[in-house]
Length: 384
Image (cartoon, rainbow, N blue to C red; front, side, top):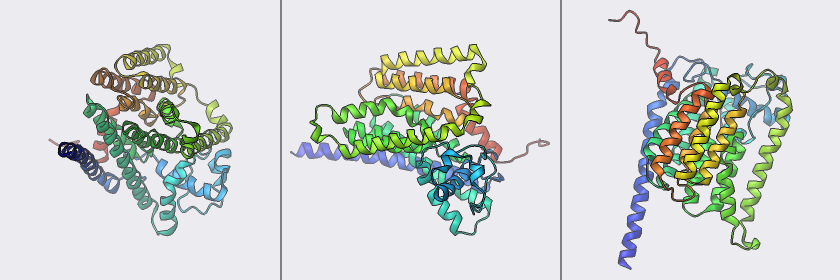
């Protein structure tokens, strides 16, 4: 009995250290980056003096509160008249809301801030970026915990690459890290043997972002695990109802939004269709990644790579933040079962992600560093 108690205490101590380390890393990262929106000279407080999504989503949330599902069926520019929003946005005026309604829950606190505090637009932008950056670091914490729960082998490399993606997302005001963080929580719950909770977290990811479809293979595995070998009376019906509702809400709002984007889609064409060489190179890299994932990891990781490849092929815009999904497959190595070669699987999948990102989505994963340097606004011309 004494040895069993000591074993439990040792396990609890390892868990505590791992969680504590993840929390310290995230806290240091937040403090190291939070000064940028406060001190830079961007009118929107973002890293590049260009992006306004953090302002747009708050505005769209206010419009949703006043006009309901019209945000999905009409261009936001047509709904902004008489909205009484203190910081109206002219950009995105020809587009409806292009995200599931979970985005409104995320940005509701900022709506309360905008409507109750006497802030200038720039001050509100600073608060918005800091808020998104904090959410991003909560997601980073979930990713680090998930990596700690999975088998060892190149986990630190995955953490570094995810940090580079997340840091730029947060500093530019994009909330996209949130749905990946929910997927990371699902990984941790699966590793703990709790497929019911994993499904719940994947449902949250689904109502936050359409690109959460990247977690579809993991969700199917969690669904099978949660129901297989159990009589129907003992199925997690509440969780299944939530996941079903999340899927219906996400698909329903996508169906509402899609016709209103006709003019946008007509003026764009598939990114990879610009070049046969680039198209086939992306496909070839994807097939290699699928093959390696099948051999070194498992079928579910390989299926996730295939979903990412599908997203790359149908992509209409070469916006770098859309490439964040590429770093999900290396996160899932070991989520379902013990991989045969975890280091090889993660290394190859990271290499695949880093090669595919600039081929489809323009920028490199390391772009966050030159953007940080530019945000310092230091002029070295004329200096010795």
